[in-house]
Structures are given as C-alpha cells and as structure tokens.
Length: 235
Image (cartoon, rainbow, N blue to C red):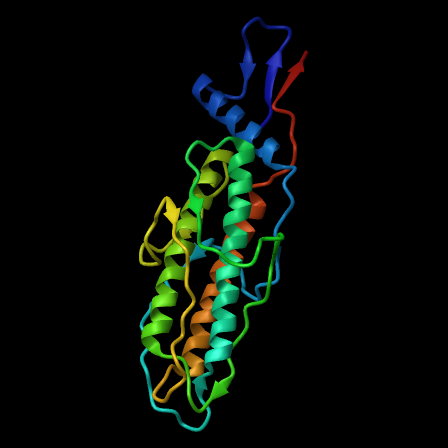
C-alpha cells in the first residue's frame, strides 16, 4: 500500500484511519526492506500447499520383519534425513536474513546444524530397500527433532509474514514444539537389523517433510515483495 499525502488539503491523508495508515506504512517499509533479499531456490521435490498448510508428521514408525529387501537401508535413511536437516537450515537462514533486514525484534536462535546454507534447498528423495534396515526408535527420535525445528521455523515465518502484511502459514499444532532456541539436531537411524523400518513408510514421512519445506520456502519467498514507494505526494 502506498500512502498518498495531499498537497492541496492541509492535514489530509488518503488511505484510511491513522492507525491503519501507521500499520500499512510499517508493513510496506518492511516489504521494501526485504525486497532486496535473494529468493530461495527450492529443489526439495516437495509440493507447496496452495492453502499454506504445514502438516503434522507423526513419529510413529515401528520395526517390522523384512520381506525380501523392503526395509529402509541405514545409509540412505541417514542421507535423506540429513537432507531434511539441511533444508530446515536453509529455511531458518533465510528467515533470519529477512528478520534482520526488517528489524524484527524477537528472532529465533537456530543451532540445528547442517551443511552451510547457500540459498538452495537440495532434493529430498527416497531410501533404498534392504534386507536389514534403520531402527524405529532412532528414526522416530530424529523425526521428532526435525519436526520441532520445522515447527519453530514455520511459526517464525508466520510472525515475519504478519510483520510485512502477508498471509501466514497454517501450521498444525501437532507438528512439533516451538522453541526460541533450536538445539543441535543429531540424525540417528541405529544399526541395520531386521526387524526394521519399512522403506515405504519412511519414504512417506520424507515426502511430507519435503512438502512442508516447499510450503515454507514459498512463503518466505513471498515475504520479499516488490519495492513500492511508501509515501507519494499528490496534487
């Protein structure tokens, strides 16, 4: 919104009540400040929800006996869960860049770790089937830690959205636990064994993570906006 100041009428401001004008001016100022931030490149393979929903991902995997090679191999389970961890770091880094640029007063502290952020979210794929696989207790603990980090970043993104006058994310209250400081995330899958986690079941969790990550990335990119003059003088 551009606020119009009239030269011809003393004290006249077009655009609404003073309260609305102050909010609109602050939000436009924040959008203008964020307009110079580079967009995230999202290669996660996830699909951003048009409804901006970030869904819950239950840590409810159980160990099951192998039937051939249908368990999630430990190596690829580690690789894909680490890809999720790295993606959340990309989201957090971009959110914090926006926060710093617009002067947001209460940013989060992100210590989750991961490969140094470079502005690109790498692909989150699937695991490889094996006769022995990752262990449910370890994988569930990792999913819980990733859930909590993702919930914190999604809530923080919504706070930034409000600051710039954009729609917030719709985050499931069951996704995780919000924390102003995200602790280091350890990706653990246990020693390969049978029973273990089924490949198809872990792959389904990874797909949900990818979709949530794509949804948050799209919202962060939308916060950047396009520079618009905050105040213009009209005749």
